[in-house]
Length: 324
Image 1 (cartoon, rainbow, N blue to C red):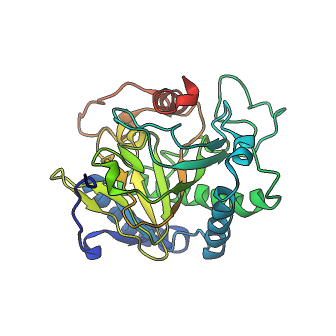
Image 2 (spheres, rainbow, N blue to C red):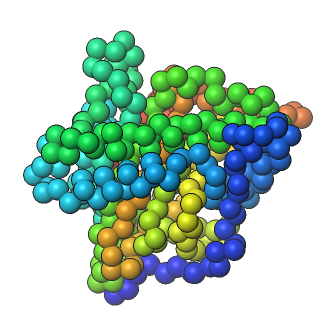
């Protein structure tokens, strides 16, 4: 038996875009970067960004906290087991990508916007807002990881603004309601994967992301692989001081399939523990995703309008065993 086949590509073939002008600089400079981002989103759906605004100190403290959490005994981690708000610990075997033959070989911890139970927006209709769960065994855990989420939210805002600018739209076109986003953050642990597990076992099986935008920090172990336009699986090398950006299915829908939602997977071949940290960026639950806003010159929308939250929730229900 062996691992799933993949192809190693040169790092130089991966688009790396400096997005600092989105945060500091003239609109003209921001527009220039936005055009680079649009090209990558249309041609690949996957690229890296540097000078993204997430401080290195924030990344380091979150990474350290991630390792501390996953080193806890399983019985302790299960004290913060995933709840109905999709906040908490997912153990090995609780995530299985749509159409995958095996469950993912990973464990993760998920959190979102920190709102108290009595907040008026915490309702049954919006299950993504609600109580986060923090392990009492690591008192500083929230303080260590929540800043990564906050910085990632701002980075996501910058990227969504750039997507609009690059498409010649008003810069707030995708940002009409973002005060209570249903964005999620997660830390993920992948154990070493033996060749004996075969070609159909993955850390994360081949999939596309559900929502608008994914921002990923990965350690130097590697294992992320992306499917190119020729259908080949190629390595997505770790690159220092960058975040990986994936266009998600919902943004592909919102741009009337102008942007590509790229299939990707994880195979941990290195014989080492692998860690990654993710921001799954989405706007407010009731944001209407209407592809007609990008249609020009008589083009017709390929999809009907729907709410962001309803779409993401429908995809969750088919991927996580605790929701069955």
